[in-house]
Length: 451
Image (cartoon, rainbow, N blue to C red; front, top):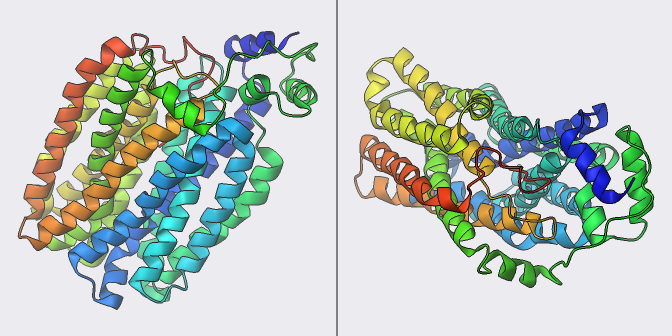
């Protein structure tokens, strides 16, 4: 068997237990990332009370982790195309664990903000690398499910963070939530070291030392015959900068720019909703515990949103499903704050918003053009995530400024609903650049996505 035959066998053959276990590890890493990213949203009220922060100052803290994620996705993730997905993931996991543990003993808003940036750098690298690996180890038939499971893992982590915050802040203080997340992330480092394999596509395309032996070891674990030789290497970008230049080459420029625009808008809307909802529910008249519960239900709904989108995309065109998700999210956001007069209605609508908003993010990642080959795959995913993080960074901070300027929660949610409508309109332009959006993996062996 040759390297290209192994890739074909993985694409078309049945999934082995080893492949599913690899995807499970990636899902777990996304779960931890969901916890680490949104822990600030659930501890924000307590942190603000302790240090007497304004809404704008709290907005900066909410955005700090996203700044780090943008830096990690833009500056660290591309190294996964140079030195391998696995070493980048392991290093970034260690960075995220250190950032979370030190956050639990921070003594000022400035310290906590700096540590949130550090944590975000690690998370940005983990998200890009782990989601690429998940896509590369899934067969074509099950790649959509692998994508959805990774997004679901992110929502599970966010939900666990909310539940822990509700139970721990009153008894142990907000620092205990950061400590718990840091310890869990630290435990994941040895787990990933022993259970997360290197990317087959990376080994075949970059040919590091011992690549053939390493690929044969992976082939045996997947029940495939050993390789006689590696495939002929395709031309690869010679450096990180060359990878970025290839993303904007004439062949890829249109797809890349449209993708970046869509990521920017969806991430801005999504992170406003997930970051500010607990606080804004309190502003709308609910108690602190009810606000945290509403935010938790929002993330709980997100657990099912990505999986539901993956199931629908197996029957209908992904672009059409995603547009329906975007429009439905916009309608629900416009009615959300008005529903707080009925606690049950507010909680139910919050869970549905979480379902559809999370599905919007998962669907957009699944729509990522399959034109990115192995040599720039992590760079392509990382750059899209980085541009999306810019929107995510701006949204909580701008929202804080708007609240200080007198905007009501209802007005903010109406403004964000327009963002989701604008993204749905943008997808009409994205279609020609991704003609195979109903089968995102058809043109390339692996197109992973992340939340």
